Image 1: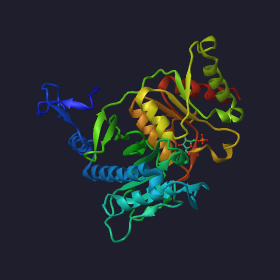
Image 2: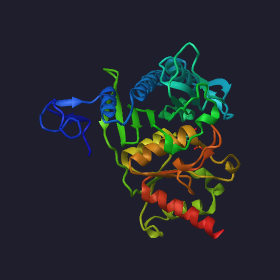
Image 3: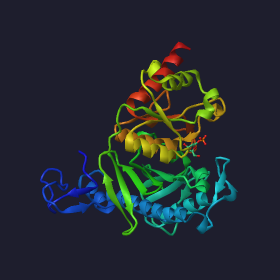
Length: 363
Ligand code: P6P
């Protein structure tokens, strides 16, 4: 069901699914809060998770404000510090991380947070009540693009805190992607857009800056199974495994090659922006293993990049693998574990994955 961003309604709810139905001419926008109430009524989420998502969305609005200031806000450039990944932190990495930690400390929905920017999980301060959820996030993915004013984003994942655990440690976060209760990202681009799933479809909300609310702009998004657009960092080509060389070589061969069609390429080097393009018009994104990063297991992080994006993409009818297995089936071994990522239009992910599985079998 593809509802427009403003769902026609007479103000009454249809008898079957409790959602506004097209019968009148009054245009009505659905806010994130109304959507969350709908999801609670449908039994898809509970009150605590609904409140948690509202808090995260509100924190992301604050990150959008900080990001949008650019040079005028004194927020560009390096922070002069490094993170657990051994990466130099941008000022906005640190600011975004602090915004999310502060916003989520007092609400009572969380038992702990984990962030790309911190080695260990962040406990909820003792003066605040604890909840039953674990929140993981990359506070500002693609931050190398900030100084050149290219879209960046926040990625988050919500897990259930294991029963009886009040002081969660890293091992309590190590749950497979299939156990996620919610996943989402906010892309800070020309518009500020939240994409969210609870396992009942993938939905998009656009920030109405005048009102300060996220407004439902696409419900039940579907990624086309076929595509002619791929995203990969071609500068790594000489380091790829053989099946990746084969697969990309076939795309580049175009209509005269084995795929008998021309392909187009995009690479923003900001995962949130590349994934949002795929969520919007289809496509396929790859960050495969290569000789430079093989010892690390990949480039992108499983717990707060690959898993949430895989959940979002699968719920929109796409696929997400490491080239050898479904990302969401992986049993994590570390909070900052890295994995290869193949995600997007299902048929292309399947072809690329098949080439890797076939090559492994032949070896
Ligand atoms: P490369 C950003 O640093 C990031 O983690 C992802 O957002 C992005 O897809 C990737 O790394 C870009 O990597 O090697 O092209 O700079």
